[in-house]
Image (cartoon, rainbow, N blue to C red; front, top):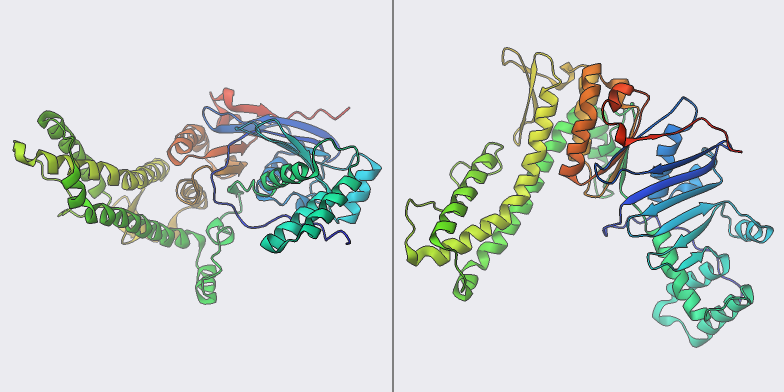
Length: 455
């Protein structure tokens, strides 16, 4: 049986949580530079800087390509010899050009340009192999239809390709599958922010829904980017409330059954304190329209608690404590977004609402259209919105030269706000900049990219 065709990397995004990226290294960038970039784990914000021409933007693009499985596509544009990613769980992936004639021959026959080496979290190591990869894909495609002959042919081919191999060919095949899954399934969600984001919004280009009608896509394309973001905020309001109501309905449906089984109750003093705390939290959520003023789901806060009501009230307060965090996370993002923008706007105020999305008023309270914001203000609004709302927890956000759209005062605010957003939205940031005002007192976040040539 002839060797089946070599597998192509999967393009299907993987939704399972991924370990964080802790180090990114590139060797032979443009045939000139080696860069070693440890990501700052505590603040979750890393700032790379260096003279023009050392490849800051190229590094961001390589990070994005590696995290999305597109390195071979970008290699002709941004050439390198070797690239390494280290993950928080101890895994390490290396992409490299072939070192030997045998490897070069394998690559050519498989129509590939890079070999990968993997060290798994448990210390096991594996390397890309055209033969093993082809047979692994062949057997996986056959699934339950694979015969003993298929398996025997695969194992014989693996032994013939690697006669010095110590491990049993079945174990070698299983180990290779695990390593290949790590390489093909790395798929960190990334957002690369460039200064042209007013012309092409990441909302449209990075998360297109194939089910969306051509009419809706064309309608968005005709809208200025800033208006699309106002519509998107309304969508996020609706989605957050829908998820909250689904959780509330689930708890409500099981309330009486759980009440009958409940044995442990809170003390009257603790119950009173927690009821007051829940009510204070609900008041803050009403400010954003996330809960109605007449709120049927709110627990009653009596001046005195009847001992006969303690069990029901205890369960009620626990249900509220389970439901509210979903709304509170969204409200915290709304508050951060509004405060950050209003600290930047001159003689204008931004207001957020479910009904109207983004609203701007001048100093006299008159409504303004969103296109009345300056280009710098629009850049800031879109950047902040993307970071707070258009990212999933655990995403890697790459920001290229933010100073190009930032006033000097805004540059000084940039990193402290980024650190807060990283914590609030569970994100990691890598920022490429020339500006000492961006870095300011946060020198511990710096990773210099030197202009020293490779030996």
